[in-house]
Image 1 (tube, rainbow over the protein chains, first blue to last red):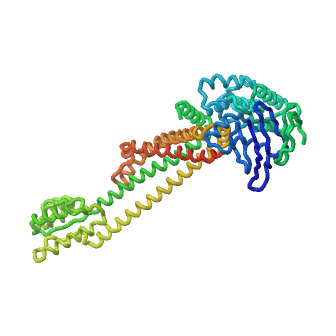
Image 2: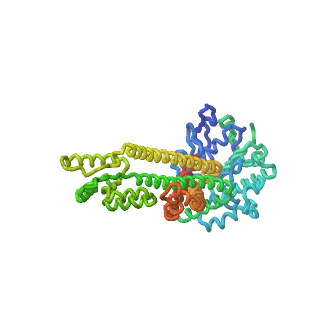
Image 3: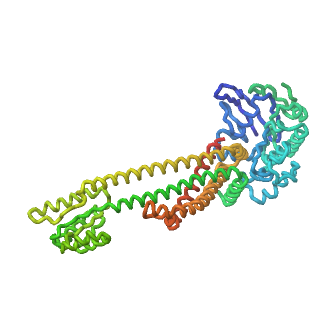
Length: 226
Length: 310
């Protein structure tokens, strides 16, 4: 489904973010990418979203090189990938409902679909009572749950969660990980980047370990080992 | 883009305008400043234009004829003057009319009137009053008259005096022509500079307003929103700033024009800016609103482009 083929990224200051990284992700898989800060985890995610181009190598999504497609095709690709970020990246001038609805509007969904799906998804992440609140009226955990609701509302093929628990306390971290597991159980591929040892060890899923831009481990039921 | 997208874009633009209250307020304020300067530039143009026109109208040329000049010859000269492309109009005043005008002018000067009575006859010749299309063209008309006199060699001279030949008057007309042209140029450059300056400030204000939304634009890109779908609400917001600023500006220009109306009329002569504002309101509305909408739309369009590169 997703294939990183000998991907390298060297920035203009000669710092190497990724060095000949190759691995694939199968449909329905839950894969965690771990490593210290600066190991190249976020760069990998940005490459999949066509936010950054590799210096060499290719990234394929459903057999299509994501860096070899038109702008419109990039928009379509991004609608197939739900994204969750450490800093939530919610639209501050929109309510929780509007934030989730925006992703559906961008995908060209009808008003009727939006009116029926958005409250449903917000209830799934336990925010049914706060759908009219603005992001600054929600806690960190609640904001992250809105971001997850936004990521899943278009029923994407893949959810990419880049350090989603980085700004959360242990209780909220646990809740977010449980939601991601539930999404995966329903058949959606999940790519999680983190350096939270507790999260990785409790998941008992595939773990790809990065160190200074290289893949140093790829374990089927891995643990956080660095 | 379909109807649904258009509806969503307008709704998003209106909501953002309302929710970004302070930013919207600041942007509208800056735009009011810009549009107000454009409005003042229009007033300045009108006042300056009419003042210069007034000056130009005051410049003329009088050709005084001898008392025995035959009327037919004078009228023939008038007819040939009218055919000149440089001549705007030629008015003929007969000896009797010249005398009547003289009496009228000196009605409170009994001494002069008494002297006139003692003469027993009309000492004044007929007059041709000539207005050129442009101040600089009096020299050409004077040359024409000189030529006419030269042609009539051997015949008695009928032109007694052309006031253009008065060196002081000629210099005054030349100077006036120079001054009016220079004044027009300076005013144009100054007004242009002010308008450009305020447009640049407005442009920058909108850029700053959109700079504060750069993270939002990035998020919109990452959820797969198209460029037009992201950009359009910002352009709607910019247009809204322009429309509101235009209405405020027109409301501010009304009392200003009223206040300045009489003073511009008496000081500069000719034009009353309030009357001009009322009679040309559609022009003001079109220029001010058009400038506001164009400025808002273009500035927003360009400012968002910067953050759409992801």
